[in-house]
Image 1: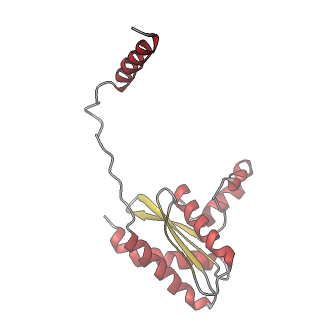
Image 2: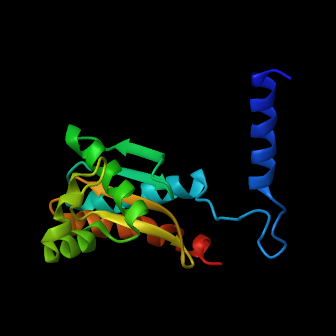
Image 3: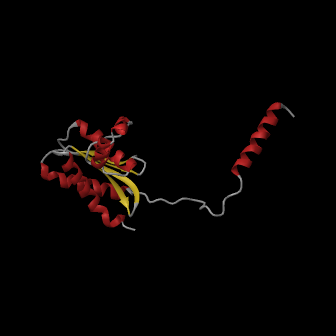
Length: 169
């Protein structure tokens, strides 16, 4: 046998040993809830409608549990920055599992971790909310461009409220 053949056989034996026998107590597959596109679009529309009373353009983003965009739209008259800000707020809420305004408060209270705001795509400012199905985190919604971050959050909450019935188990 050549050294290459011995090396390949050794790797095969090692990998089969590491794989071991399946644990009968552990589930074979994990199941997770997924935010479907139609609900994401419904939530976005409701957030836009709620922000219409402010008579300013906003952007709305909905992301899945990992922070990947499901829907992203810039409203008429919204500033260019609002598109990325809404996406980053949604991403932060989905990955942290907290409203972004609450996350900002927590970071300010703990200056030793304040630098976390520098992590790519994290935006530590109000206007992003996690989307939950029961107690399971399934996504995030972010709104940017309303007159205040509180108004951004209220519009985001309107989006969640519009799909809440579909999210309960």
